[in-house]
Amino acid sequence: MSYHIIIEPTALLDIQQAIDYYDAKQIGLGEKFEAALDKRLVSIQNNPFYQIRYDTVHCLPLKKYPYMIHFTINKIDNAVTVRAVFHTSQNPTIWKKDR
Image (cartoon, rainbow, N blue to C red; front, side, top):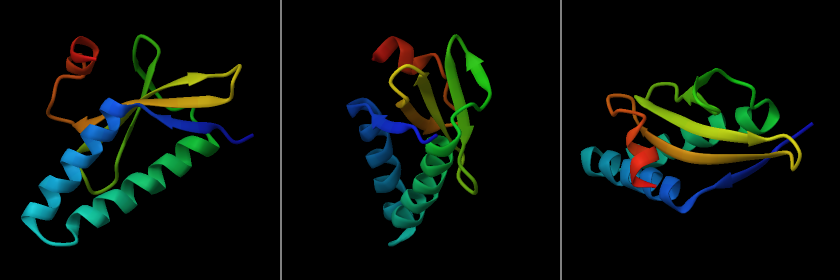
């Protein structure tokens, strides 16, 4: 069973900031970051039951990038909502306060 992915606007902002950061480091690196993120989103779409890190929030790290996808699952609607995508050095409770 495949789950529908919903990306919250604040998570889109997280993603765009990461892409901009990597593009500022090297042209094309932001695109590689986005491709790595897309692969992980496909993994989540196919099987979202990764580790619960806190409350009901599941997390999945990106490969090769120090970012983690924070998401929740709605089993009734077969939907996964991406709540945040941010650097692993950040405190995960930040997005709960700001959003």
